[in-house]
Image 1 (cartoon, rainbow, N blue to C red):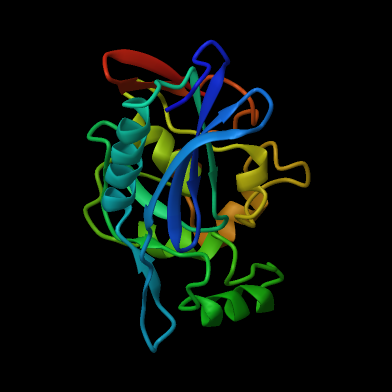
Image 2: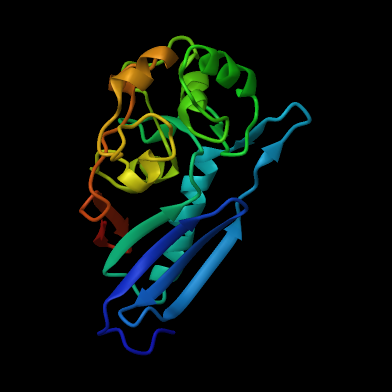
Length: 220
């Protein structure tokens, strides 16, 4: 049990490549409690690396609930693996397809094609993964594509609008030099509609609230 409940506690959701971990961290950066679960990525011989984005969100919520039984955090923060991509529907808070992991290599040929057009994009960036996910037919007009942080903001909050931050946006291959906005010059060759991307917001700031044991905990 957490000994001093008077100290501010941050519930940190850490979505890594193979493990999902949620920790309660105090003001001295001491981990007061933690819980984890496997975060499986499904790999194929053809270079695919996918994951169940809905299961990821459900596991994150379950781990937060488990820790909240010990002590409800004052705020929640997210850190995650970079460059993975999720297609989701904000109104329903549901992922619409398997997420694509950062190490997925299916779009290598597409990156070479773009390079011949003068657009330098790496298969390890999110750009061509976004393009691949948005190629699905009959997507609802509300469908959005984003990195794992944006998806978790959407899935965990009741009212929050999904967004990403410059540190995550910078590894998509789609931003301006400061990673403060999406670059039309990079979106156009990939046929990416900016309407389908989430806003880029400051790294620190309120994203919404997570309901935990009767408490609306800010996700920041």
